[in-house]
Structures are given as C-alpha cells and as structure tokens.
Length: 506
Ligand SMILES: Cc1cc2nc3c(=O)[nH]c(=O)nc-3n(C[C@H](O)[C@H](O)[C@H](O)COP(=O)(O)OP(=O)(O)OC[C@H]3O[C@@H](n4cnc5c(N)ncnc54)[C@H](O)[C@@H]3O)c2cc1C
Image (cartoon, rainbow, N blue to C red; front, side, top):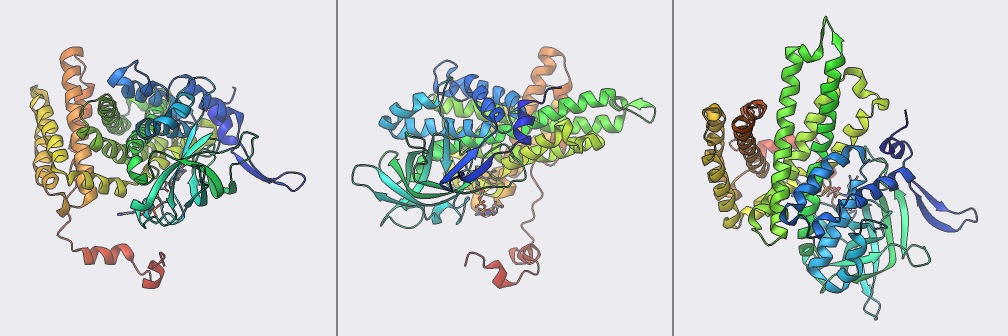
C-alpha cells in the first residue's frame, strides 16, 4: 500500500540546516515535498480563495468548513498555513487597500498561490501579547526594520507574514503595538533579516515547520496607520478560531468512521463488536458529541460568513470563541475515547490513528487557550447587546422545537437557559469558563434539537433525536462551585510550590 501524503509528511518532519558546507549561515528549513503538495491541494480546492470570492455569498464559510472537515484529517496540518493565509487576506483587505491590491490576489489564488504566517507569540507570552518586545525602527523610506524574537512561528515556508511590533517610543502594553507585513525572503532567495534559532520539537503537528525566529532588521511595512495592531487582528482571530474549531471535529469524524468499520469486523467473545450493547452505547455517546460539534461549527461558519457579507456581527463575534473553546476541548475527549475503541491497534502508528489523535490536541492551544477564550467571551458580554442577541437567539430556537418526542430535551435546555440568563446579564460575577462552556453546550443542545426535529419529520430518521437526548443528558451548564472560596481553591491549585518558584515572571 502506498503511504498517504500525510503519512509521508509526518514520517519525514522538517529539519533546519543552519550552515552550508562552506560554513556560511543559510538557515535552510527543509520540508517534505508531500507536505507542500498537501498545501497546494488545499489551495487548489479553493480553501483559502472561497471566502474571498463572491461565488457562495454568505454561505462561503459553510462550504469552506465542510471541505476543511473532509481535508483536515488527511492534511498533516497543512491547513495551518491555509488558515493564516485566509486571515492575512482578510486583514489586508480591511485595513490597507494598497498592500491588499499587491498581496491578496497572490494569497487567494488557486494556483501558484502564496501563503502567509502570523507572528504574535513572543517569549514574554502568547495569550498576553501586551509585553511583546519586538521593536520597529523607521528606515526613512516608508519601510521599517524589525528587531526581536518570535517564539512560535508556524509554517515558516510562508512567503509573507503579519507581525506585531512596537515602534520606538510607543507606549507600553497592547496600545503601543502596530501590525506589519513582511516578505520572508528577498528576491534573490535570502532571508529578509531573519535568523532561525531552531525548529520546535512538538507533541504533534510533526510535519508543520514551527520555528523560533530572530528578526535582525527584517524589512517590513505597516498595515494601515501605525498603532491599533492587536485591534486589526480582531477579524483574523474570528477566522483563525473558526478554522481551529473545525480541525478537532474533523479528526473525530474520521476516527468515528474507522471505529464503526472496526466494530463491524472485530469479533470478540462470540459476536461482532457492533452487536455489543456496551460498545454501541459508548460509540453512540461519542457520536452525539461529534454531531454537536459539527452543528456548532457550521452555525459559527454561517454567522461569520453572514457578517462578512454585511449581516449582523453580534452572533459571529460570540460564536467564534464559543465554537473554538467547546470543539477543541470536546474533540480531545472524543478522540481519546475513539483511540481506545480500536484496542491496541489505536496505539500503533501504521494504522494512522495516533497521527490524527496527536494533531487534534493543538487546537485547544493556538488561537487562544480555553481560559483565554472564556475571558474573551466575558469581554464581549460586557457590552449588553451581545448577551441580549445570544439570549434572544436561544429563545427563538427553543420556541421552534414543537414535537413531543423532544419534550425531555426541551426541559433540560429550559433549565440551562434559566441558569444562563442571570450569568449572561451579569458576567463579571461569574466563573468565565463555566459561563462560556454553558453557553456553548446549551447552544449545541438546541442545534441538535432543531436537527432532530427536521430529521424526524422530514426523513423519519430518529438518530438525531438520540443524539439530542444523549447530549442533553450530560450537564449543559456545569455545577456552580462559587461557594468554595477563591483562597481555598488557590491553596489546592498551587499545591506546595514555593512562592519564589511561582514568581517566574520575575
Ligand atoms: C504547534 C504550535 C504552533 C504555533 N504557531 C504559532 C504561530 O504561527 N504564530 C503565533 O503567533 N503563535 C503560534 N503558537 C503559539 C500559541 O498561539 C500560544 O502558545 C498560545 O497563544 C498560548 O500562549 P503561551 O504559549 O504564551 O501560553 P501562556 O499564555 O503562558 O498560557 C499558559 C496557561 O495560562 C493560561 N492563561 C493565560 N492567561 C490567562 C488568564 N488571563 N486567565 C486564565 N488563564 C490564563 C492559559 O489558558 C494556559 O493554560 C503556536 C503554538 C503551537 C503549540
């Protein structure tokens, strides 16, 4: 059997060649052709181009999400440069017509297209970029030179990158950061003032060249006016979070298909696994979670696509962090269960299962960790119109569920909405994770109930009903633990670590 492109790419990870045979510093990053081929396949299928062209209108992100769902598990995370390119094209189009006219057609082409990176994370922090120390100095000709270290830069095969940097004398904190665009290599193929420290040795995403880079006078151009660097990344983050929310469920869907097939063929204790009630209940529980993830993915894609086409922006701003935090986390649980469902085979590399499992984990880290996204939701809810729009959407969907078979599901959703109502109205007093998680899961339960109603009445198919039942029986809003005082929680969380060791920020 021919190895898949993804297998080939993962088995031959990128490597860094710092010097040539003459001892000259070259910092070559050698990447497996199979991985570059996967990037090309994604570009030619229109995964980047689609939302930037008029063809599918407000549904473009839904079509894109569907294709990403199919492509991602076989892509060896070649989706990473595609996400960043999609996001860069969006930012340039929104904030700098001149740079956009020069770069967006190249970034969104289907053939011989360019890719883009995004360089935010520094040693000082990724969740909190306000302490970024990369400095931008003017060259006097409209261009700037960047100096500093970018600590995580994925897809160093990119042609251009968006980078945050602080102009000299700009204020401290996020307010002093500007956004710059740079080409990674000069026209003669040399690095543009960039030195590669090393490639990261990672838990997963093995085919993806993620490097630590020193910027030593990289020539760059401001995106729009100087300042508001992090604000300009807002639209990019919505897109990147949507993509990051798709990867986990895509991998789970792939593993679930394999698990169903395995259960049809694996004979244990006198019967096939697919006839074993314990195994059936377990797979059904995972399948319900998968359906809930896909439903939220697609609804977020529709909301973001609609906002990009002049529609309402309130729900898209909330659904982007909600789908990312819920699906990235739920998919790790589901994938871990599915690995076990194959017994030993799930742990063995030649089945391809460990590769998919490893690559799912990254989605809860990049583009904002779970807690950071929960804080983001709190920040949004501080403007009451967002919470009001969310609660109105819940009520509208709830009112549309009318068939008796869903009464039990409705009762659980009703209970969850009652708990959420005061929290959404007064987010400051809540545990951010409990609130965001509760919002996501209640929304998912409603989406499943809507789908179940449609499937039952239009297709006479009760699988959606079972998915809604199983999903809604898990807690939609987690138990309230706010009566356990913060001081006691801190004692358990911090354990016996000495105060001095905790002060790593120095
Ligand atoms: C494979 C890979 C590729 C990457 N590629 C890129 C890239 O191309 N470009 C780029 O810019 N970055 C990239 N990153 C970096 C990634 O975006 C950051 O790692 C991520 O944002 C987290 O930042 P951090 O590593 O500084 O962790 P920290 O910010 O130190 O977070 C540590 C923990 O603290 C928690 N935490 C932080 N703040 C709060 C808070 N206010 N409240 C509660 N909890 C909090 C977090 O949830 C987390 O659990 C990549 C990361 C990985 C793993």
